[in-house]
Every structure is written in C-alpha cells, then in structure tokens.
Image (cartoon, rainbow over all chains, first blue to last red; front, side):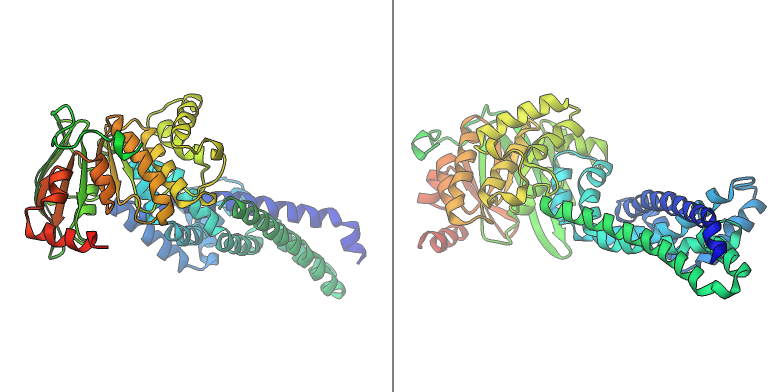
Length: 217
Length: 261
C-alpha cells in the first residue's frame, strides 16, 4: 500500500508511456489502414492483391510474434537499429493493427451506396479524389463502432510491450507486484482502473463522434 | 417554363447542326445479353434528345456509355470530336465536361447542399472556394433552393434533391447533360418541379440526352425522340411525328400501352 502511494509517479509514468504508445499506434494504424482499404477496393489489381495478402498474413500472426520480428528480427536486417523502444513498439502495434482497421473501414466502404462514388466519377474526380472526398469520409462515419473496438483492443494489446523492455503500465504493475506480494489485488485494481479510464475515454470520444455525425445525415 | 414557351417542334435538329456527341456502331454485351446493338446516334450542339423505350431496352446503359460509366466492347464514341479516353486522368477530364443526373440523385450525403455544388469545381477545376461558392449560390437560386444551401441532402425532399443534383452538374459548366431517368424515383407531385428546371435548361440551349418515361416532357422540350427496344434504336423522329404517327410496330405497341391510361 505504502509503496504504490509513495511511488505513484511510477504508475503515472507507466500510463503516460501506454498513452503515447496507444495514441501514435492508433494514428499510424488509421493512416495505413485507410491506405490498405483504398488499395483493396481500387482498380489496380496488383495493389489489391498486395493489400489482401498483407491483411490475411498479418491478421493471422500473433501479436507476440510481430513484436519478436520487430525487436529481434529487424535489427538483424539492419532495420530500426538504435531506434528507441517506444518507436519500435509503435511500429509493431501499427503493423499489427492496420489490417483490422482496414477491414473495419472496408465494412464502412461497402455500406456507402455505389451511386455516391459514381456521382464523384461522373463529375470528373480521379479515383484518389473519389476515395478521399466522398467514399472514405462516409465510410469512416459508418465504421466508428467497429473502429472503436479495434482501437480499444489495440490499447489493451500495448501491454505486451511490457515484455520487450518498455516501462509502460503493465511493466510497472509487474514491478510493484514483485516487490509487494501482499498487496497484489490492490495494485492490480489500481492499474485496471487506469486502463478502464483510457478505454472509457476512447468510448466517450467515439460516442461524441457518432452523435455529431448522426445529426449530419 | 410551360408548354407554350417550348421551342417549336417539327425540326429534327434545333441545335447548330454540328455534332457534339457521336456514337458509331456501338455494341455492348452483359455476358450473353446484347444490351446495345449497333447503336449509331449523332447529337448536335444544343439539341435535346429524349430516349424512351420499355425497361430493359438498354436506354439507361446507352446514356451511361456517353461518359463511360459503362464501357463498350465495339464501336466508338466521340465527344466534341475527341474519342472517349480509356481510364485515368484524361477520362476524368472528359467526365468533367459531361454533366450527369441520376435516377437516385446521388447527392453526397456528408456534404451540405452548397458543398455538393462546390466540391467538383474546387477539386476538379481548381476554382477558388469563393468563386465556386458564388457560382454555386447563383445556380441554387436558379433552381429555387438557395435558402436551403446549408442543409444536408437528407433534409430535402426528393424533388429538391434532384434539382440540386442538376445544379451540381451545371456547376461544372458541362458541354452536354445526361439525365438517366431523373424523375422515376420521385413522388408525382414533385416531378413537375424537376421537369420545369429541365425545360428551362433546354430553352437556354443546353445539349441534353434525357432517358425518361415522361412523355409530356418529350413533347414539350425534345427536338428528337429516340425509341429503343431490345438494345437497338427502333425508331427516331420529332416528338410530334413519333407520338401521333409511330412507324415501327414496337413503338406503336409501346405507346399503346403507356398512353391508354
């Protein structure tokens, strides 16, 4: 009890790293996921094939394996050598989460009526303009609920980074429980509460977005 | 905007005579279905051509081939002397010159009415936002929707949405306007407001290809009626001649069915 109170700054610093990891990974995943979905539904067959393969391969690979690949495999190929652990963690989470974002967005793209894209093409927009101006903005609106689930799952997945030397929340929790075996339940509850706050914040943001866009329709 | 003000019927080419859209030996199949069968059609600048025919006759497909929303397998289509490009930037440029109005309006649901009118000019024509909005408001004024400029499409009635869709196409200053059954999804009392806008457009000299079931519009505004059946042009004539004295048996049969009620 005393330990976690007197060292509460460690709890906060752990969640600060978790937050940074989650924020930048979410941003990266949303951007890469949007690119992947544009390739998947686009007219260029090679790109569609690439995006489909990427989604299927990465989605079928455990997150732990991708962590090992980035932290142990990449340096062997002279990639990401000397990069901070936080950045490596973000790269890993982005690689893993972007296919899920792609598929959530694709559900949204499928929900956009064909006529919307047809009207864009008919007015002279290129494929890229049709996607960025007309299809994706509407697809994102329809994808908010599944995207929220993806981002929440991703936030909780960041805890795996604890194993790879990132002093994020779960790593800090392990430190506390190792030193204070009697207070395990309390420590666990404190950290669980931290994750709950983050996840509820994401849910709240998603709720606000949905409410704002509903009036638009 | 009424029948009295319509251009004088009885002349096939009300336009300047020089062809703007030319379809030559166009053929298209959907699988084994021959949807367009040897279509030859020349549309003069300023001419209003109404395409009618039973459903499944290929009239919508014909309309959609002119801006290549449907590809063709044989023949050629030229616009202002230029053959339709295949894919890519040139095709996009060509489509910017061809306005299209759809049966289901297809206004962009996430954009306001005014944004629907300015998006094309800003993104495709690289017009400044201020100029695009000024022109957009003028066009909304013209179709009678200016007071709804900040609303979203779903907040408008079908007739209003279709008038906005016409204004959206006009905002690109197209050389020709294609109408693919523009009133078929509308409640009866809203059809007139859309047809009024189209008649006005015809009187201003716009080149128009209109696929429709509105025989009243064909009589009022068309320079020529093209009757399609089974993917081919079965008959073409002035509206006056076509409706009072159809020559082909298919047209007689079709008119007999629709004009009896």
